[in-house]
Image 1 (cartoon, helix red, strand yellow):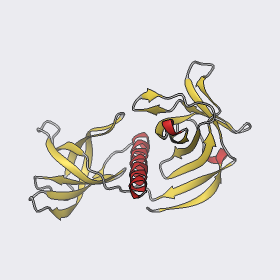
Image 2 (tube, rainbow, N blue to C red; image 1 turned 135 degrees about the horizontal axis):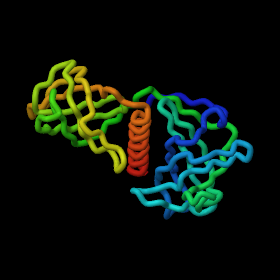
Image 3 (cartoon, rainbow, N blue to C red; image 1 turned 120 degrees about the vertical axis):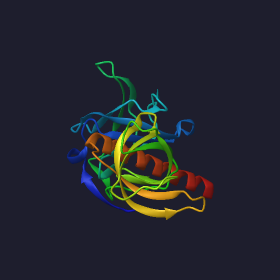
Image 4 (cartoon, rainbow, N blue to C red; image 1 turned 60 degrees about the horizontal axis):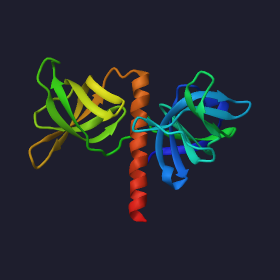
Length: 229
């Protein structure tokens, strides 16, 4: 894993709208990772208001005292701190939220811009024209900037393809343009591997892709840890 850490002032990096992963360590029956986002922040009281964490689309009102690690995701870094839940409920506007205290300084994990993970995902692509019938591919690795894909057909460097890939329940690429940047060899089955680069990625989508990769990396690390115990 390529990263380095440092401490940064919370007021310089926390802002509403950032994606968040809440990793619960206790109580045991709630252990796991939950999706959230920064809803509001009070720097004077050092209270962070998160959109109520969710698991597979279901809101989970974490009870007071729940111990957790909060990971705030940015395009180039992750800000991490440990805390416990103050309360879960609805704010004055009726929005479901969870409040946690945060320290004045957070641990910043500075990462390579596009961390690459080994993951097998199945998708489809079209060559040249979006009107052509889709063809199947499987990934060998994936990053927010591109992927290594396995296909049956021959592609050429600089060729433009249109990728469709379901990544998460709320993250899908649909006919997204990508460029073939290199040929990466062939498998014994005759299928070919190509490195491709995603094109025209807006900042909001890039942040979601970075968040997806980071979440999968954590899941893999936790799985390896549990298997070794």
